[in-house]
Image (cartoon, rainbow, N blue to C red):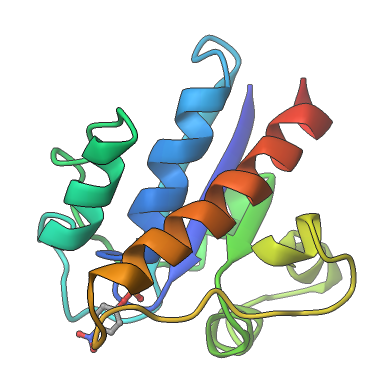
Length: 150
Ligand code: 4NP
């Protein structure tokens, strides 16, 4: 079983989308895909309705996902930890216990722009077009991730 965790700040906008998109590109018998937020603001909440809507537009249902906070135990559970931006990266790395933990943490957009450490912009305070833009970036990155794992 290969286990992949998507991480953003609130676990209601970007990482639930990344979770839903990557799940749709992998067979579910050999892979576990999950998501978490570095903050605890939205623990137990459904994804933002704008993320649910853009996912639905592209044929994915992420409405049943529930927000949770990233924890140190996630370093034990997951093989790959994809962060959305530099702030997430710093927050997750700060919890790493050793080099093995740190080595699991990757910027998701480095899958399509190697070594650039680009951010997936936080769409929370913007309009619907921000969610469309995030969806397209994540779809491209997840296509590359799925290809590399299959
Ligand atoms: P996310 O977006 O990290 O992509 O889930 C955010 C969601 C909520 C907040 C910030 C970003 N917030 O400040 O509540």
